Amino acid sequence: MFRASLHPKEPMTIRPRILAALAFAHAVALPLALPSLALAQQTAAAAPAAPPACPIDMQMPSQLALANLQRSKLASATKAEDAHKTMLDAAKLLLDPKTAANPMGRDYMLAQMLSLVIPFGGEIQPRAAVGFPGAGTLDLAVVVDSLLTIVEKGSPACKSEVSEWRQYKPYVLDVQSAYRTMGTDKADSAEYYAKRALIFSKDGAQPYDVLWRVAQKKNDEAGMLTNMKIAADKLVGDTANTTVRTNLLFNIGRVLQDGAEKKADPAKLESYRASVEPFMMVLKEAPLSEEAPFALQGIATAATMAKNDGLVDAALSVIKANPLKFSDVTLAQAGVQSTRMSRNAEAASFFEWAMKVNPYSRDYMYNYAAMLYESKRGSEMLPVVRNLVKLDPSNSDNVMLFAYAFKLFGDSVEANFVKPAAKDSTAAWAKATTLAAKKALKFDSLKTLRAEYKRLIDSVTAYSGQADAMLQQLTYTQFDKYKDKTILKGQILNKAKAARSFTVDFEFLGKDGAVIEKKSVTVADVKPDGTGNFSVEIAKGDVLGVRYAPLANK
Image (cartoon, rainbow, N blue to C red; front, side):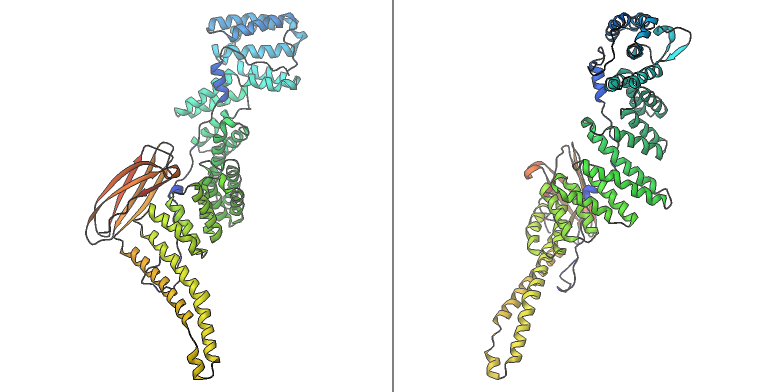
């Protein structure tokens, strides 16, 4: 960093500040919502309504019409004995040889009846309990699947209605059991119930969601990736589960990168490359998601491993196309990636956009000012730095930004005015052939320009000295923002010659700069050249930034 002891002409580079908001590893797996489950719980006494598109006749012959009445009775049953008595009555009708005249209607009705009786005795029941001839038991899930498959193949127009029956209560109960047992760390049981649910329906995402979690517990990378991808694909267009799909896509990329570290090339490099696609889908589909900045970070990691910045370029192009669709954290992360590739003007734009979304982040301000300096835009730095120092006054790095800005002004005056004026004056002096002509030359403009240059360099020295004279340095080490709480951690460096105590009055800022909450913290007995840590937490979310009163410089 530049200090007064350095010569003003020495090159100065501002190191961008690491963004505390990005200092965490991976998103967690989100639970999958069950819209079909909610429906089944609310209407447990009613069977799914039959859409008119299905052409199967359920009224002929008469045995089917009578069985249809039994279906309504079974759907409203609340006791196992009543359900099984109704099932036996219906089975007599449905297994009557006369129903062979309408095999499609018979099979469809029988599948529905068995689906309705499963909750009253389980999926494995004695044949006699459901009115089937012979001894032994029946796997009713397999029987229902077989019957519904016959209907789907024989009458494709009924597929939508059949799908509702496939995801009716037996399916939902299996899914519920799978999630419940997964929650108690019984992975084998969770896997069993998930696979039972798949017998009824392979259209839902929930069984695959359970199976990838089971694979995770078994350290089965291939199983994780296969089931996560299927689950994510099943959720395309499912507005109730958009956040879950986003999380699945992110975790696909994460698993690929975690797995890459255990492989040797070329498999390692291929895993990194494969991670880019799901991360890009996160950016495109869910620009405001919590996963988006980490997806961009993941793409940057893959680009580094593949030595291909074009991967990052593609991601940044998505963001640049409509930057204000993205969160401030993602925009700031884009600025970090542009900085890494030495694209200072582009980085400045990203940090500026991040500031538009969140104008109270000291890190965004600092990095924006840093990139303005690298882009030689000193006049634009000053208002940014002024606002930064209002938020974060006891950090000498911020004060030093004033010195950087005035250094740019001085360089500009010297390069664009002082040197050309001096050159012109030297040429005029050389052309003057007589002593009188030389005496007539006036260099007032050159003197004025040199005086202005000196004033600017004096400002550099003054601000640099002010930064050096600060007897403490307050920095943040962690700033975690959650929906229901905010945690701020940091440290104070004591640069004085005696031990000191510090009390910091923090204001947590929300939308439009409103103070959400005030909180004070004391850091006691900090030794000379030592640091003291502080931690502040409030039970409120939606915090955009923090402001505090300057610490006494004594």
